[in-house]
Image 1 (cartoon, one colour):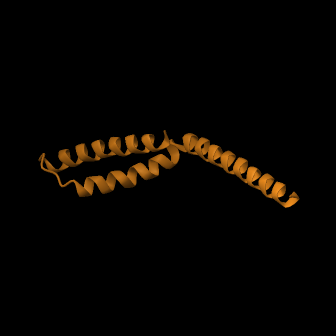
Image 2: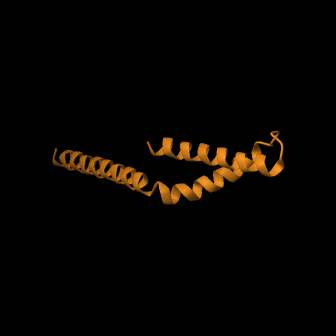
Length: 83
């Protein structure tokens, strides 16, 4: 979900930057690289603030899974030591 939100934010920023570029240049022929790079930079900063909630939920899920796997590994190692 987080990755889809980041991609959607990048696309929205690209559309806005491309639109501003077209208005400023006065032509519809725009180079794609510069608006894409600007949109990537803007969306990276925006996602830091706008997507904080989903990012923290994702990190909490990853941490919970890592803790569970670590506990299972320790239990298996302790059981192996008993044998």
